[in-house]
Amino acid sequence: MDNKFEISEDFAKKLDAEDTLAQFRERFYIPQDTIYVDGNSLGLLSKDSETSLLRVINEWKTLAINGWFIAERPWYYFSEDLGKMIAPLVGAKTNEVVATGTTTVNIHALISSFYVPKGKKTKILADVLNFPTDIYALRSQIELKGLDPQEHLVLAPSSDGRYLDEKIIIDLMTDDIALIFLPSVLFRNGQLLDMSLLTKEAHKRDILIGFDCSHSVGAIPHYFNKWEVDFAVWCSYKYMNSGPGSSAYLYVNEKHFDRKPGLVGWFGNNKDTQFNMSLDFEPSDNAGRWQISSPGIIGAAAMEGAVKIILEAGIEAIREKSLKLTSYLIYLIDEILSKEPYNFIIGSPRDIKRRGGHIALEREEHSFEICEALKSYGVVPDFRPKNIIRIAPSALYNTFHDIWQIVQYLKKIIDRGEYL
Image (tube, rainbow, N blue to C red; front, side):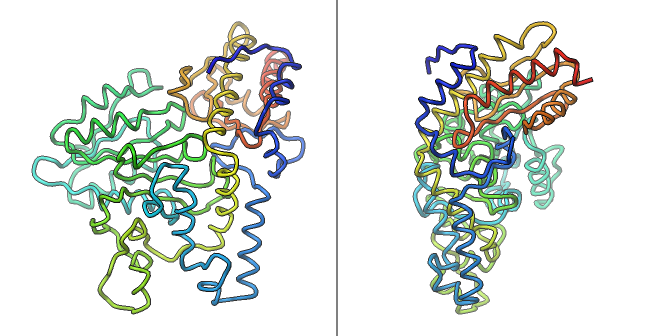
């Protein structure tokens, strides 16, 4: 991506005038007088999601229990239907994805299925920069197998506390590793790992590998089936804009459809025989076998509209604009806020092939106070200890002028000492 940026406000407006995704902004509810750049924590509500949510609520009101089978999208198949909708966004076959559970529950469901310590292969490889819930779940699953996490969980180190090196991860793929579970994008600084390379290297060594893609799906194209990723999980309330606490997703490569789920539940049963009420579990012949309990239909309803709008915009176009927004932010920080007295550092990869959808702005002193001061200008970022202000512009509802304004506010906050 060859961008020649300028620092003027007119240039920001020019970029907005040329933006092919600009029309999607009108389909989101943006809080009044707000520049919302926290979409990597919670995406905004779209009118499309509101429509699908209200439809399902009305179906509950008018159809009651009959909604399970005669709703516009019968609730009985809702999880599988949502999986089919999102499959193109992650490069999966339609039977390899299902909307179910929550991210951590899905981690437990899949790790319990794919982590089978045997002989010398008893360890799980993860990393020190992962989101805490992933590590909690991995330790728990190791303990459930009667093993000690201190010995059987290997965490790939970071040389600088900021980035991971795929070469180091690959070097740790030793013959005692049974399973690898990594993030697609680091939640603090937005580093995008090379999932294709890591999967290829893991399979060379007869190691299964899965990814937590909560910070990438909806912002970045994926090709799970082509890469032969064994399994993946992700939430839907960040870049997918499906609402707080909405259902998560899981992906399992079709080559594993003969694998028995480690955590079995009624909704993972074959749909054709589920109501036979047999005490013998007959798993579905698709990713649906990893469902555990009945889907939360109300909580999942907004996902339909959310996925629809992403498909309409196109994930490749979303990725292109996302990279342009973050590249523009990096340019403005470098030009305006990198020297005394501002001293901001870009803590995210500058290489667009290694960058996710957000930028980590780092500053040695008063970064938390500066983040709080930004809020007085109507900017909604978020903060990660100890000194990271995360800016996550959404390609669907943020503008280049938003980015320009944020940089001007940061300059004003420091010039005036407002953070003090």
